Length: 119
Image 1: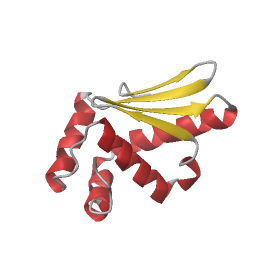
Image 2: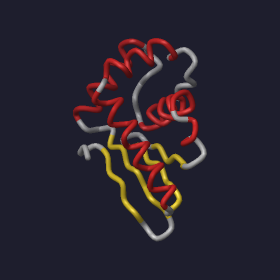
Image 3: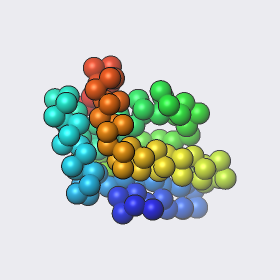
Image 4: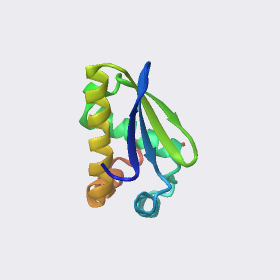
């Protein structure tokens, strides 16, 4: 797993943390803001972007988590169940894929950036 993603199990939930202030993620965020001035990639905007991306590309995940986005972090909570665990891992895989394949993310924001309700 990448250092900007962490999945932790608790008695009542599974938490996924996406640390958006890591160097690699900040660099991607800066490129997104260059192509869409509304894409200031704080935690809230990462949340909006991820929700939009998931609705388009993995709609089966959209009702499996609750978001807690802050300035320097994006967090999603899942039910502590086998299904919740699979959903958390699927979301982690999506986030890693988007960060590691920044051209794909840049293309996505170029295409859909005006439809995204940025914070």
